[in-house]
Image 1 (cartoon, helix red, strand yellow):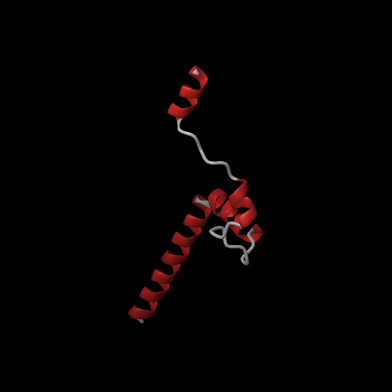
Image 2: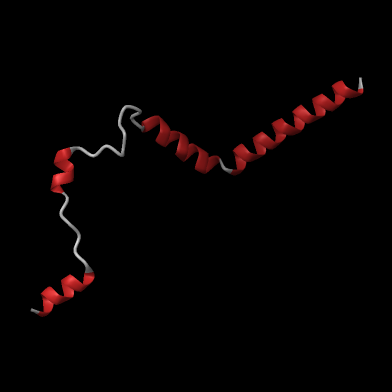
Length: 71
């Protein structure tokens, strides 16, 4: 009987901790779950289309910008 009571207490404690974490982080978890629901699982963000890669201009160094402004 002692082991069964111990198991019930442990299960109740785990449920309480899970509920406390859900309530404490509710805004963050809701935002994350909404983002996951909106995401497209077939799209890989690491795969950049060739047209988008060609449209990106090379970045200039701050030193280049000041040298061009002085000239």
